[in-house]
Length: 161
Image 1 (cartoon, one colour):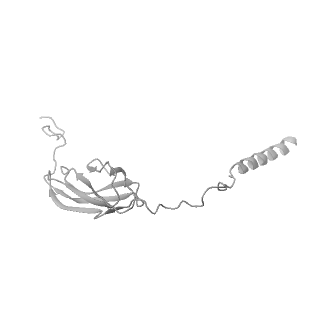
Image 2 (cartoon, rainbow, N blue to C red; image 1 turned 45 degrees about the vertical axis):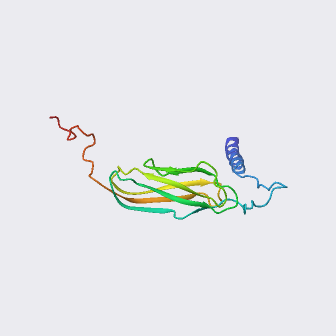
Image 3 (cartoon, one colour; image 1 turned 135 degrees about the vertical axis):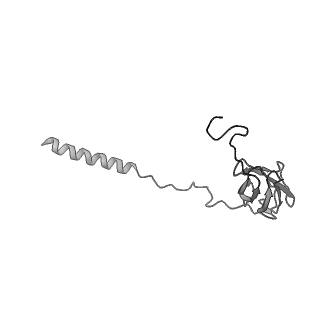
């Protein structure tokens, strides 16, 4: 009889402890904390002449680079902290020095044109600008002979000679 009473009671006790352990107390804001962070009206702003470029069709090995021109249209210096390509076949070059308010700069993006086929790649530009990050994109098509051999100079048929 005692086992029949203690077992269900123990089960209900464990269930109650577990269910109360899942709630979190409501948080209240710190007494002197501002209710919302106000954006800096003087912050730099990254304004590009264009954010995408189409190379159309190029031949394998052709020069495949484009310069994206931008201007700091804010009131404070612009600092580009990172220019990250979507893959290793695309290489961005970004200015390292701060860009003064009203000054201009260039981000050069180069694509490896030894890769035959259609491509569409992006570069993400991260900065202290109020409109950060900005995504630049390039696309195009590289024509050229297809690579038939996985290992040039080797017999790839799978059969010996």
